Image (cartoon, rainbow, N blue to C red; front, side, top):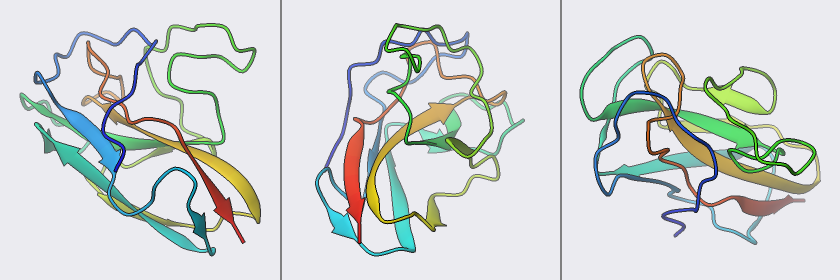
Length: 137
């Protein structure tokens, strides 16, 4: 199980609880899976609240797919990410969802979980998983 990652991003203003971790509960780095693949989000040390709900020690999940780790730009240089975009590489789970079923093309794919605050901004100390690589057959 992947629990924590070094994060280069600078987060927003919302504090994260000390020791909070987000991780993949059912897939691991190097796994080979079939599509569609269900990904279950694990979280410890904080709670889940829908986007727009400002409640201490909570956030909601975001899944980064096939992009550099949080805080790194496409060019490999460090970037400041204040708000997480919403597109095919940045999936938002603002309803408080804790899993998703993805239709991924065959081949290798990278995944990273990131917690966002009420406004989709990583916490002041970002809560992010390691980046994992899975292979879809």
